[in-house]
Amino acid sequence: MPVGEQRFGIERLGVWPATMVLDIETLCAERGSDYATVARSLNTFQRSVCPPWEDTVTMAVNAASGLLTEEELGTVELLIAVTESSVDQEKPVSSWVHRWLGLQSHCRNFEIKHACYAGTAALRMAMAWLREQEGRPVRALIVGADLSLLGFREPYEPVMGACGFALVVSNTPDFLEIERARYGIYANEVTDVIRPALTVETGNSETSLLAYLDALEGAYRDFVRRTGERCDFARDFSRHVYHLPFAGMGLRAHRALAALALEMDRKSATAHFDATVEPSIRYSRRIGSSYSASTFIALLSLLDHDAGAGPETPLSVFSYGSGSCAELYAARLGPRSREIAAATALGARLDARRPLDVAEYERSETARVGAIGAADFVPDADLIPGWFDDAYAGRGLLVLDRIDDYERLYRRT
Image (cartoon, rainbow, N blue to C red; front, side):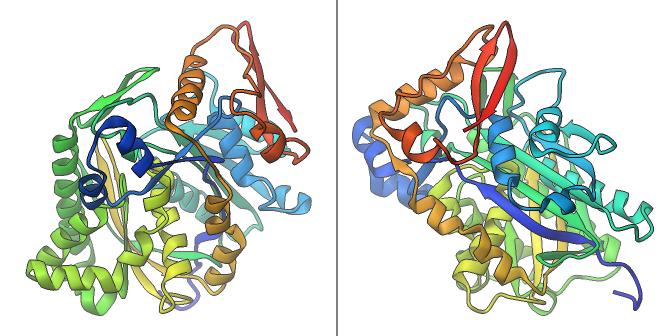
């Protein structure tokens, strides 16, 4: 980066990985599936589950709460919400988030959608906005949350999930600095994973896998075109982070990129994956799909599980969104990246989730999805016995209180 040029990126981040969990071995036993085959293929061992008193709004707010002091909240002048699980088709999730985080009235806010690419798109948009501010001490806040819909007994059921996240974006990139001129884009209309109705999430898994790999190749070629020279991934990057619709996608993606960029054979690419990627997929194994949060969850996993990754580590980051749009970009871990990752305590949060049996999981998911589009709804706090009192009561968390004639009413516990 030229001397004196402003630096932009992620200052802090927060995660809300849901509060309940389903073990895939338990699910496979109930469904009559071979767990060893599922675990080997998908590399996923758990999936997060959300209770019916949470939704996109509550998960986004709970992820962001506590990230900034009251004084720092006054510096937030841009709020972007990203989701493919919006609770309303007109009113943006950002309106509720703006209220419940106590942001100022002159903070611009809106919601965007592009499947799992939306978080990266919002990050780029926030950085462009910051450059316009010419050094003013302001921040952008990106929040997002997504929740899988019902997929009982579908082949992809083990890798569905739920996750909320929040990014503070500023010219003090303590967590992650984005090298704004080093990126590649690939866009191509494709029907891989879709939500054609509020309560339907469907698609073709084979089409989705191929679309992802096509986008990875296309984004890499555009990266090379923009930077003006063949990128030497062995020289330029010491770690690689991928969008993970499921943890097993990381190895598939890296084999493809290593063959293209490093001309590696399958065996060499697998060894390279173990050294430069594998630590970043470990949290994904425990969450399932985290949608737009995926690459940021991978960054936390890398920092928590790879002693060699830390300040100034150069990264390649790949983000993909069904439909489709993808971006491969260069980044560098910030000076406080390890400290900030530790503060999220993501591993401890995952450990603290309540294990569900399959009947509880089905009951909770059915109730939660049944509220989508409902005119009236009151979440049953006793649906999972004792869990609301144990994990929510008195903790100041945001929950859905009820839906009254389509109006969504929230409260702090």
